Image (cartoon, rainbow, N blue to C red):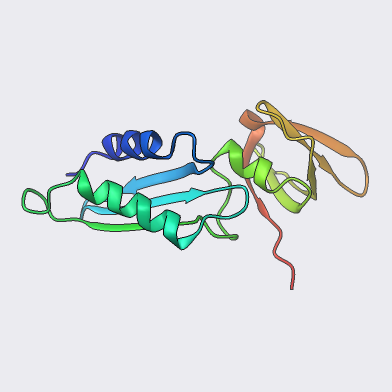
Length: 140
């Protein structure tokens, strides 16, 4: 089976200093590799292709077959990286805390340690370790 940590380390090294950040790397038992990456402006297809080619160069299909997909996480996927909070500052988000309570509000004052949520009632401060999930509110 392909080593997830090896893929993650390779991608982190490749994107260092580029403005691209790694959101997640998944490798399932059938060697389907999924890499989610983004930038504050939104990752481009060319950037995804470059990451894909870099990963593919480091793997040997003759030794072990695999399927590889590199993409952005998408709007409906909960945040997994602190950089996603920075990217979405100023947007409406839904936050579920570790107790299961849900809060909706404007994401603001994002730092490396946490953020504030501006709701109709009051501003609520969160540390990242208090958050079970957070994602952008999709509006139509």
